[in-house]
Structure formats: structure tokens, C-alpha cells
Image (cartoon, rainbow, N blue to C red):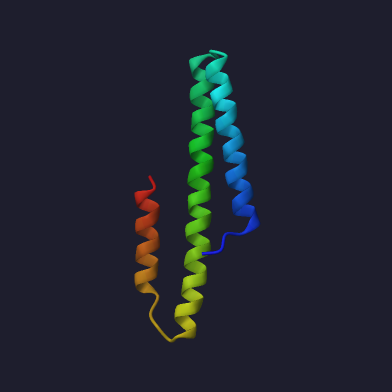
Length: 86
């Protein structure tokens, strides 16, 4: 699968958030602040997973329709990926 620039940028932002989290821990910041940052990282990852799965699903459905095939299994697989990611 080819990943679009916006998805790559999301991952780079997440990487920056994780670096910030490491710095917070090194500086012994308050537990609430660290957990808040961890939650932000997790939410960003969750959103990125959803974007990747939806883009892939969209591409696969187009290909299935061009080949005259049923895309029901693809939708089930995408839902399972999203469920697994949580």
C-alpha cells in the first residue's frame, strides 16, 4: 500500500509527541501531565489507524468493483482491523 503524505505527516507529529513525552518524563513532570500526553499520543495513533484503514478500504473496494467482485469481505476485514487496534 502506498501511504499518502498526510498520513506520513501524522506519524511524524506522533513521533514528536512521543519525544515530548520522553522529555517530560526525564524532567519528572507531574503524573497528570504525563498521562495527558500519553492519552494524546494514543488518540493520535487511533485516528491514524482509522485513516489508513479507511483509505485502504476505499482503494480495495474500487478495485473489487472494477473486477466485478463483492466487497463485503473487505468491509468485514476493515472492521476487524479497527476492532483489533483498540
